Every structure is written in structure tokens, then in C-alpha cells.
Image (cartoon, rainbow, N blue to C red):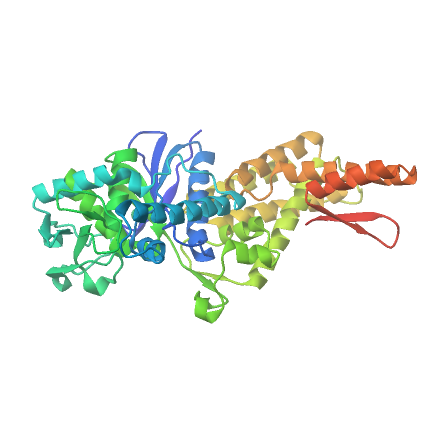
Length: 480
Ligand SMILES: [Zn+2]
């Protein structure tokens, strides 16, 4: 069964069902990181929301083909990578320095995604591997009268495209036709002709082009990679709200200028992250990377849950208090999972107004999917899970659920974990493994088999388990 999913479309400002061009296969393009530094938790919120989006379509029975680019040539990358280069450095050396910087931060970015359990994209193109496609696209725009050359740089003529401004809802009267801007980022008050190809300045790495040595502008990178890898009709394109203008508006202008028809059907944008009520800024001391959080003992999966439990279109105020609440919610779901994995004993006592567990379960599944299908309403979807947990825990206290009922509940927990990736089966498997190792260590110590006890201790250490000797002689443990 394939469940239909609706998402808010920035283009129409309405929640609309996603109807893929090819039934059963959704093409998804997401703007990837600019790799010159660590991703901060605001960036990571966007990538987590996109992971939820992709996983939800997959769990709902749709195939998803996902392309996320790596921006590895851009103003800030050039600034940071060329800082230590001598003024007479060769172009080759400049490219090498740029590549060393972007390789390093690409690897660190992918590590962050892995620890957040973000599923890898099917295509992960680096912009610098698609320079010929970018040049061809700029030539095409020039041939169509949508681009012009000035001092070795090429600019997009926004007055030439009637739909320019459709995504950001710009007032065409207020646009500065004829004026041009070289920067990749600017605000909506300066909607001007933007740069497609930048003439090389001294001290910058460059590529040969029909307009002389230069490099691509940021916006053309995504258009060229998206067209090359996902084709000329894309179902969903997504990014953070800060990308609506100018980046996505310019992507539309470039791609539709070349194609002559609609390129992307659904534009989906995730909201900002605030930290402790303020915009994140290094000067305010509230600027965090995932590594900063890890140094404070934060489990990346708890951070993942804290993000996913809020609606992606609402500004999220991240706080350490909120993170603790997320940890507690997760503990509750995991404890329930453990209980369902166990056998259960009837506590007895009167149990009236009982709804059969299978009915409760179906109600929860329906409510969960109705919420997810309605623009990924995760707070409501999670509420359905917690309602189920309360109902079944209360019932299980009195009349133990049967093995079959427990297995059906576990199947639902697996299904929902397919999207939230925070209460997987392995956790329970780990529990059992750790408990049996602790028992083996206790037995070895009791038998004075010290080498064996040490060996088991090392095994536990390798699993990242910290043991705590309790006053009563028993041994507790936690994940270190
Ligand atoms: Zn992009």
C-alpha cells in the first residue's frame, strides 16, 4: 500500500498532496552544505527535517531518489582556503588548497549525519565535478537572451523571465532591473541581476570558460547538478527558509529559463532554529556544533528526537531543558518497547472499560499516519504513540498482553522508528548482551577467574558501557 503524503508548498502557500511525475518514485533535491567549516545545529535541523521527509515517503511505500549536493566552490570557501597561499601560487596549488579544505569538512559533515542516523543520499555530487554542465547551462541562457556578459562575468537578466519572483512573492515593480550583484547572498530588497559565472580575481582558483578564466556562482551549481542527476521535472526541492530568496528563486530562474517549463512541483522549506530564545551567534556564546553538544554529554539521537518532535515549519527554540524533556520522552518509548519485548505477567485486579489492544493499536496507527501525511505533523504523530503507551501499560498492569499482541505492538514501533530512528530494536539487543556480560563477569569474579573477569570488562568497555558498582553489591551500567 502506498499512502499519499501532503506537504506545504512554498510556491502555492498551501498544503498539497505530493503527486510524483513517475508514480511510486519521488525525486528529491536538497541543497547540501557549503563545506568550509563545521555544520552548526541550525544547519543540522534542516538536514534532519529532510531525513524525516525522505524516511516518511519511504515508510509510506514510495520510492525516493535523493540528490544532495556538496558546495565545494563558493566565496567563503575561497576566502578560507586561499588565506595561507603565497601571492604567486599556481592555479593548481590554489585548487589543491581548496580541495584539501573541502575534503576535510565534507568528511566531518558526513560523520555528523551518520551519528544523527541520517540516511545517505543516493547522489552526493560535488559542485567542482560539474563545471562543464554549469558552463553549458550559462551558454544556453546567453543564447536565449537571459544572460549577458560584463567584464568577463556573466549575469542573469531577471527582467527576461516573467515568473521571476514567484517563489519569494517579490514585487516586480520594486526590482532593480539592469543593476547587477556579484555576491552569492543578498536580501530581497536588492533583487537584481545576479551572477552566473564570476571572472577570476587575483588570488582565486579558476577554470577556463568561453568568457575567460573564472568560476561558477553558487546558484548555478544546484541548477546544473539537479538537472543532470534528477532530470528536468523534479517532484520536491527543499532547503531551509533562508534559501527561498535569493538561492531558490535564482535556481528556478536558471532552470526554467533553460527548460521553458516548470522544473520543480513542490518547494518545501524548514524553519530556523533559535538557541535559548535567541538567534544563534558566536558572539552570544550560544553557537553549537554537534561536537560541542557531544562534549556536553548530549546523545546525538536525543538531539535528533528533540528536533524531530517539533513541527518543521515552526521556529524551534532549542534549549538544554528541552533536550532533557526529549531524553525523558525517549526513555519512555524505549522502556515501553522493552516491556513489550518481555513476556509480561498478569497483575490481576479489576480491569473495566477495556479496549482490546489490537483496536488501540489500530487507532494509534491511523492517528499516527493521519498526522504524518498532513505536512509531517510530528507532535501529533508522537502524541498517538504516547496515547498507545499509556493505554497499553495500564492494561498490561492488569491483564497481560498476549505474545501476539506484543509482537503487533513491536511491529508498529519498528514502523515508526523507520522515520524517527530513535527506538530501534538494537537497543533491547544491547541490553540483553550487556546483562549477560555483567553476569559472566560476576561469575568469573566469584570463581576468582581474574583474567576472565578482565576480559569481560574489556568487552563491555568496547561496547561503550560504563559499570557502576552499587552499595547492595549489584552492578548497574550505562552507555558512556
Ligand atoms: Zn541549492
